[in-house]
Image 1: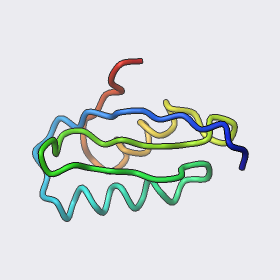
Image 2: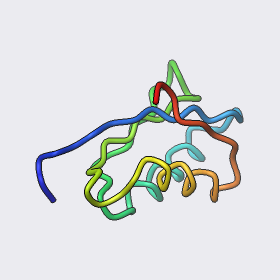
Image 3: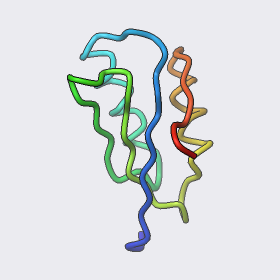
Length: 77
């Protein structure tokens, strides 16, 4: 992986427990090219994802979040 990293913010529509958000974050972190995921308690509907665009696309990250059974959108793209 190179040093060319990008970050994105995903808005999750549903109100999820911290445990569920952590599980989704772990699954996304397992994607090739994802460096880290983060949810803040103050903003539980927002997930930040740092990733390598050379290995994974933002749209693929969103699709994988939606595969977790939630509705979500990319923010600010």
